[in-house]
Image (tube, rainbow, N blue to C red; front, side, top):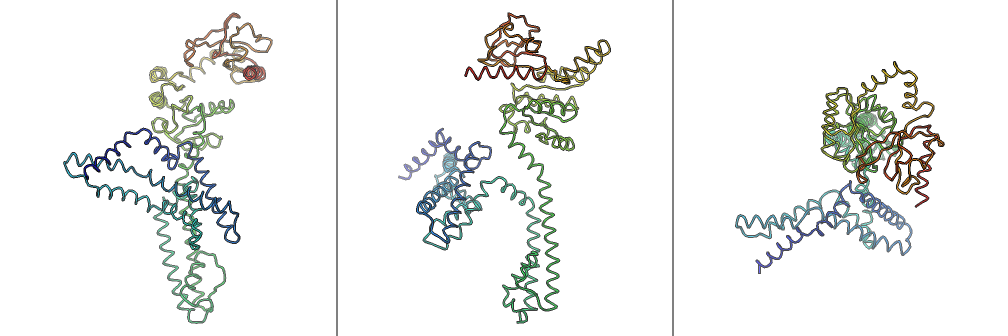
Length: 528
């Protein structure tokens, strides 16, 4: 009988271990309850906060007047069962019982020892008990008790339902994490305050508890006075009347002021130390909501120009910089900035490079750092667009070998422009006007959308000249499924066919380009 029972239990444990459905369901509930990165957890948290607030409101109103029947039913049955189910789910996902059974069974088979139910029960009980006795689980359990209205004293535990919100509010959890980082200092301060409060209580009781002060008739009154005084609250309901009592009060007041100053410095220093981490968390939460993100690695002069242009074009971007001064500069400029080292894989992995990032722009002042960033980004994602800056031609080759799609050499570009200025000053001014967008003239690229009026047309079907535009080039793809492989046709003839995915390189005034883009977009919407 015992062998049959062991065989059935072990078989069931292996069944759960090999069941994709069971693993999927348990992973779903674990993510929903505990994984802050899970996209649906925030909706669950909002739902639980609503349930908690509505339940607390009902129980508070019920203190003086009886609530409607449907509210009573909602609080007694729906809310209570939600709390119970949540508690049981958390207890379930805390540990895997079937894994404990499998581990003990395989150990007993390997060492040829008898299979012990007691060891399994003991280990499972210890793991579950560790969760049951955790502060969060205790609050969850006590929060269920106010629902049993017949026991009136249990209504005091209604406050624990409010404490449940600590689990669902990231800001509150973050605040307590900050305080936890200074727990040694806070424990020291609490010990000192307890000692001074107890000492002051005994002293005031000795001096004025003999009947000279009608407000102090027992030791509890003395402790109450000392606590109110040392926290600088000072209700004034109890005041010392003797010279000795007033001297004690002066010492307690000075001690209280010092303790509050010490407490303030502890909290301020804790927030100062955690401020970079808080900022990083805030930035990561904002970035997680965005797609087609452009990473600017380095915030020097070129990085600032790139950020400015991306902001003007309303593109999502994130600055990654390790220099604190440049990080501060980026924050003052209104950029989302992450203080981190882009050469490390962990930095790009946190940003989910393969999912959220459209391009990586390496514009640090050091060519070697740009090479390392390029290698790092390319090793993590083969599809991301990488644009790198360098000053040395030999490094340019290394950047391309490392995986950079485009390499920009600012010094070489400046030299070419300088030579144009010396030989052709008028052409230089025209080129400079286009690049700097003076008089609103600029060069832009426009992708032909599927279903637009240019999809399936020819170049000659649209009069660019009449619309104050110049068609400089046409980028056509080798493969319609590959967005990066293309060839360029300069000054394309009128009979050149156009199709969705082709990119037009046009020059003109900003208003003309904006009008052209608007007409192209409207034609797509009209056909839809």
